[in-house]
Length: 486
Image (tube, rainbow, N blue to C red; front, top):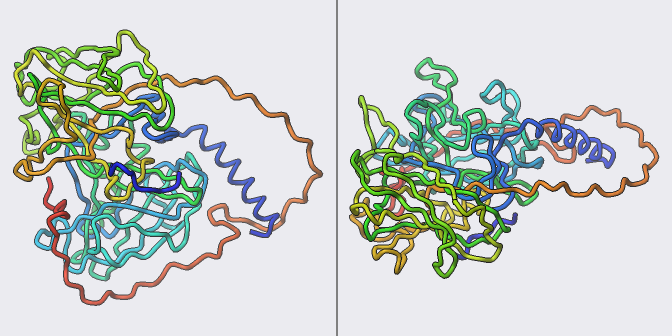
């Protein structure tokens, strides 16, 4: 889709043909085994672990940064391409703090950002598909950059985005790549996302400074966006969330996901919501989920018993055990008893969560901050939804809720609940068109073509390193204080 900001804030000819044929064959072969995010409309995903869902697939407990230089000179993000096209743009999240060397240090470093194929779970750094130099690490927390050399990729194949700090003294000059972190499963040590697997998406890096070699880093999921030359985007477009974005439900206080169906009709069967009992092992009552139309009329409702909700920790507090962070909330499934229900294109709905028979502080519901204001497109987050809160039993609704980390001044808006619904997909096959009359055979080109490089493009060699001028570290402005968030 063409990239726009949300109004709500929220080759010779024969060689080219041969190349296109090769890419098409590889695309079909690899897509047969693909289990990637595979977003087809805003908010709709077909996922290996969750099936077909509508909503927010990402869980987040906090942010987690990865310094590019502290452990080693390279950090990468593994992903599965959703398009057979050229990657031309990258957006990502940088964190820096002049007084905290856990985030950044010195002049911030100098970087080559490149795309590589996967080799056994880690980047094949001997093959560079595309690249760009980046030498302004203190410029903005959300860089947007166009590749000097576009990277051709095939849908269904694994690749890596690599941030390579080429500063001669990278251990003392670096920034961090940032993203959400999830402690979803108490027994998992790596990627803790309910709907995604470590095999598909992971943060990797080299630990050459500590003798560790290449490793997969636990629990992390960089927020980022990949732009293709066909106008499509993919990525993880949530920039924060978790315990600092949680809210009570109980008594008169309710929360809901307000949904404006704008990318096609969907049919839903249930709702899956991330909850905790705010650390109260003796929570009473039950959580009620209601599907409502635009006028607030109930379409269906279901309940989640107190004993099925994860205990977690007190609101706005991370969970710790044995000096380590652990799981703080979990998903609860609630099946619509009168479902399935069709959510029509152009119509508005709400999924409301309440606990009317419980004290006001018995349950915590978890939200996640989308990146619409950071120029992330709807291709990478659930732009059709918005988290809202009611303090009067649902009579009135407010987008977001007060920011506890800012002494409850201002509202945390442009959020979603950590919630998704399973959908029923019409799998009626599309009739095949009549086969065209075959044309005479065209002689096969004899030239050898590297499928990793567009034969019609002129390859630009990667630059050699030139030291950066002395740079005064940027001091975070108040709106950039992501560097102090836990």
